[in-house]
Image 1 (cartoon, rainbow, N blue to C red):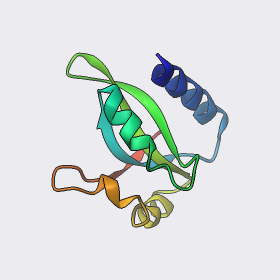
Image 2: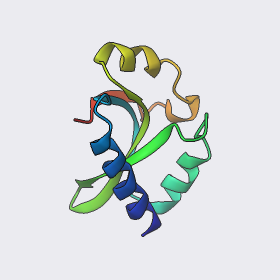
Image 3: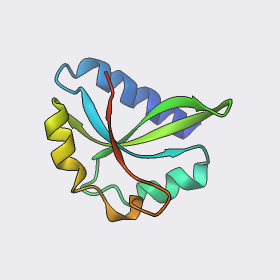
Image 4: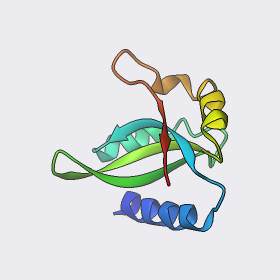
Length: 98
């Protein structure tokens, strides 16, 4: 429930931020342990945030990094994402958030 509440707060903040259009999606997490592990890599602190989504019929979380006004800014920032999220099966991607 605390992750859902965090995602609700992050969605509300996103709605208030007129300039934020893009972010880097680090991963899609459907399990609480995955979120807890991801948050250990929130550097600088406060850079990561969440939005809820449905995946496979269940509530999941888009783990996002940064808030960018343009696609170009988000693409440039992608190179600085935490290496923890760059694996053989996980590839961070720039996504439009609104």
